[in-house]
Amino acid sequence: QVRLVESGGGSVQAGGSLRLSCAASGFTYSNYCMGWFRQAPGKERLGVATINPGGTSIYYANSVKGRFTISRDNAKNMLYLQLNSLKLEDTDMYYCAATPFYSGVCSPLTRGYSVWGQGTQVTVSS
Image (tube, rainbow, N blue to C red; front, side, top):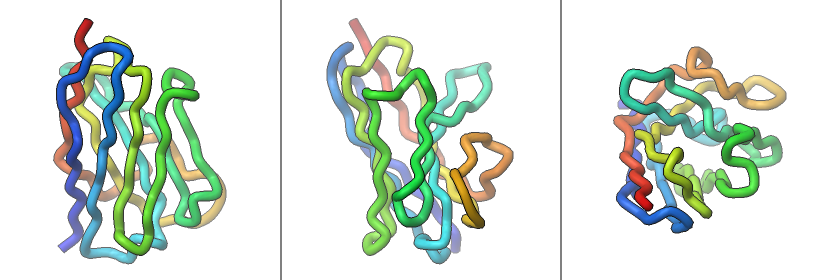
């Protein structure tokens, strides 16, 4: 059974940090692009960061560059997102997603991803 399970969300004050994790199972993880996406109620789901199977090609949305770090552990089938210097506007539901890798940079577009987790909520307060 193909499955992604996120964890690590929570409530934090502005300027604080969180580390999100995503556990993958049911597919050959090391052959897949992985991505983190976020979505506020009533708004479009947007790409935050993506990483190719080898971890050598990484994409970040401009809004998180320098603050968030995506990483993966292929031996453990795990994906991570380190969130530092959190801002109020980072409050969202965060999802991890997977899609088979072919070449180049892994897409930050939701339509490119076929496997999704259930999401983990990040709430940043002042």
